[in-house]
Amino acid sequence: MKLCAVLLSICLLLGISQALPADDAQAETVRLESENNGVDKYSFAYETSNGITRDEEGVLKPGEGDAEGVLAVKGSTSWTAPDGKKYEISFTADETGYHPSFKLVA
Image 1: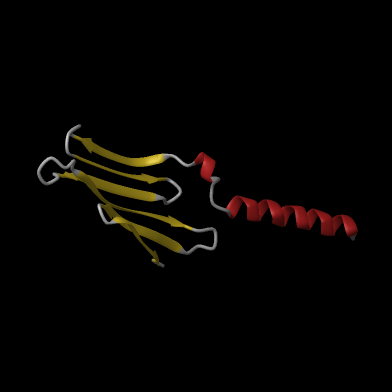
Image 2 (image 1 turned 180 degrees about the horizontal axis):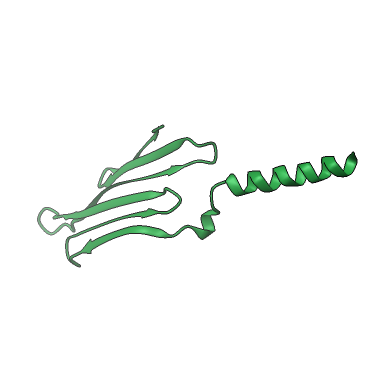
């Protein structure tokens, strides 16, 4: 009876482990877009096989007079946590600082 319980437990553990999502270390890039003119703007976006997405764009805002310009950036990233909930962080960053916004998507 003990042997039967042990074998059943092992089978259950193996079945559960097969149903779990793939290890993040094994994730692959499924989409990648990138543009950079090397002067005053850039953008990129990507998505991985484990559901992580990221996008960002930046534009150099010219300074007034002799002042240097400021890089204004906006972007977001999203992922699905182990509990199955999807989260997203959106942000802007410019001369006023870094301004993130965090939300539960689903």
